[in-house]
Every structure is written in structure tokens, then in C-alpha cells.
Image 1: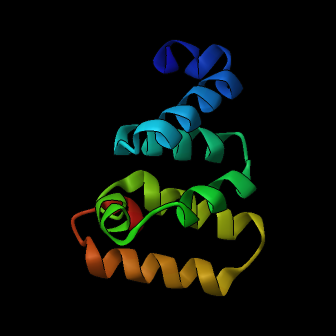
Image 2: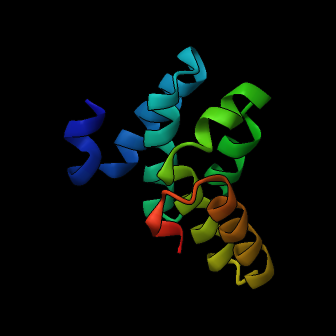
Length: 102
């Protein structure tokens, strides 16, 4: 359902993703919710999602390009260039194989 509604009804897809994350705590739901909230520029949801991660989930999320893209986009949206730069540098150190971080 999330995949079907992602383009035609992204807010509905986001709601389904958030419900899935809340109920099952599967990274698939987290990543979809993060991607959709970034696309919808729902920065408060991006922050809530990030804060909902425990340490193990955070380590798993940091392996995903969507995590880094969302952080960079969020800091860019609030015009916090220092935080944006710090996130990019951390991402590049942890994941030099991700060319999108350069």
C-alpha cells in the first residue's frame, strides 16, 4: 500500500509508514517514513523519527543513504549550514562508499 500511494498520495503513504514504524519498528517502515517526510518537507516528523531510534536502530539507520539525505535536507531547510556540514563530514567518514555524500 505504501508503494502504491507513494506517488499519488504521499501523505497517506507517510501515515502508513509511520503506523508501521510505530507498531513493528522495522527499518523498512522507518526508511519509507523518513523518505516521505523529507519529500513532504515535514521536518518535525523527520526529527520525531530520528528521536524514536534506539542505539541499535540508529546504527542500522546510519547505513542507509536515506538517513543522511534527510538530515542534510533538514539542516538545509532551517539554514543551519554548520550542522549540515557536520552531518556531511560524519557521513563521509562513516561511509566513504556513499558518493552522494560528497
